[in-house]
Length: 145
View (tube, helix red, strand yellow):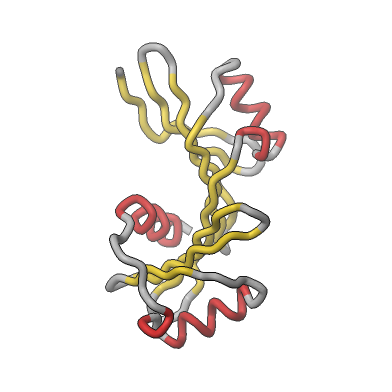
């Protein structure tokens, strides 16, 4: 699980600068993509030495699907609004941090599960939080303003 989450984090944090043509994507990756997302159209790709990322929209939500370059599906990532989080996560955030609403909410899903990463800002500090679907919270990073 850590390997997959780390790969997703690295790829989506660093990003890549250019979109690849479908012809440049490894056929094993394209085959894996078709198995997972046969219904998706208008896909844009980025490819680097280790990963291939497919960007597409599903129900007006931008999705990023990450694959190893040998075709292994690693997981997806999408942005969410606070009210789209599971109720257990919303309750945990409200109970622990009060009425301060998080932003930059990202849902990361893989074979090993789903986690939610978000930023919460106070007058004197910024906190990056990770939550599981059951509402368990952990602080990733604290920064003073």
